[in-house]
Length: 357
Image (cartoon, rainbow, N blue to C red; front, side, top):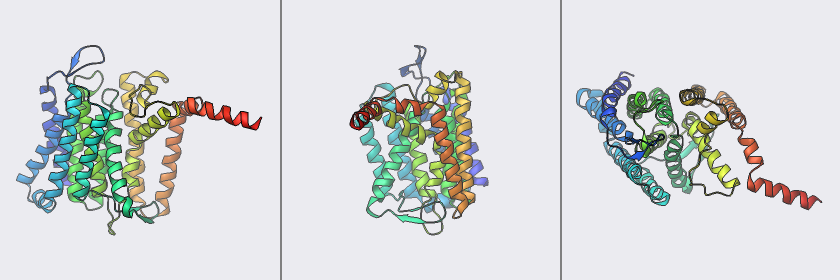
């Protein structure tokens, strides 16, 4: 675990002082002022520099990196492209179709480099061979997680802190599974995210921007389907899925409620989990951020528990418990009532009542 801790420490040491140096204002902030929204540059720099430093000064890190150099460079290159597209959007809004097209091409790029699901292990030890659906599942996973991290970046500190918690959890699990390179990369990603967080907490002096959110989401997605293989080569995808519970659940609820209200699924709104915590629960900015951290920590604990009880009934029980928690969270935040009174459900209920009459 020494390499992983060193990767996190170096990435943190680079990102922390570099973040305040990013002074270029891009978009108008929440209070009407110009704010730097290019946090992705400091996170990318911390991540890459940490890996480079370890490769230079650690023979173990150099050996691990050399074994999968092509895959590593492909992931970083595609992640940088996704981050650059986000940076372009930070300066001037891009059409969502252009962004999704770039995300698709980047996801396809790492799929061809070997970042794929293949066969998916289920809780309890069973497996499903994806066959011809493998590229569909793998690419949709990468695109989905990339955008999920971006969607939770609606309050100061949330996305970067959640990414740090998830990456740290995945670094431990990858290490425990013997995937040294993936563990080191996840640790570097966690350290770089943590280096950015102090400048992003309420009230933020620097914003993550699409550049940072897209880069973090893309890297987490790619690493999660590369590193979590068991001895048979299958991917227990439910483990990173549990850790990513908050952004994945928020994204799923967002698309469902927009569909039920007859709205475009890719048009932004202000009804995400962090919005409801602020509006319905009356939480202040810092309390919203800390609550999101606490929820993510619970999901990450579920991922670790599922890993410990891997290939046993315990993992299925953990999955069920996390599912109950997720449903409860959705209901507590009032989305159940929102779904029930949505445009489409109201119309369906009316049609059902008329047919019965």
